[in-house]
Image (tube, rainbow, N blue to C red; front, side, top):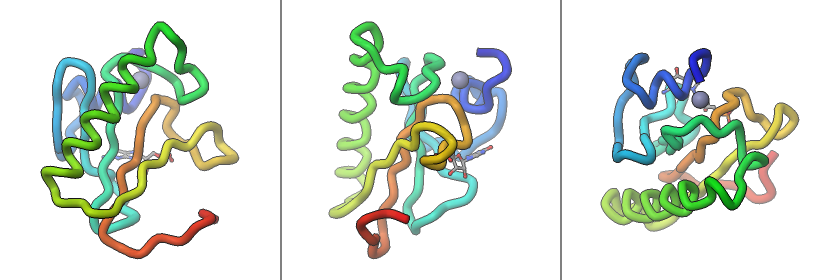
Length: 112
Ligand code: 5GP
Ligand code: ZN
């Protein structure tokens, strides 16, 4: 999608600090980290949010979770949180599917 921040980041058109990349997804450090470890994993295909996951694209999401597990293992993240905000009230500010991976500090539950 031409006017999408995370499409541009995943395509390398806007700079970011890359954590991982393959043909399906791109992982990069969040510009405003909320924990000592905070990176985002996005599909290269434009999907607006979790609400647009269907049988036609869910294999991408499965792949992203495999990547998250691999990166967490490689980075030695014993405990971490994976978050995807859906809609403005839940805190979504960029409308391209992304999974936050947060680690390195105590976290509260329920979230605010
Ligand atoms: P959301 O609020 O949609 O759940 O998450 C969007 C995330 O993207 C936020 O944590 C925000 O800090 C991050 N973000 C927004 N713009 C940029 C950017 O240009 N570069 C990077 N690396 N992260 C960004
Ligand atoms: Zn996009």
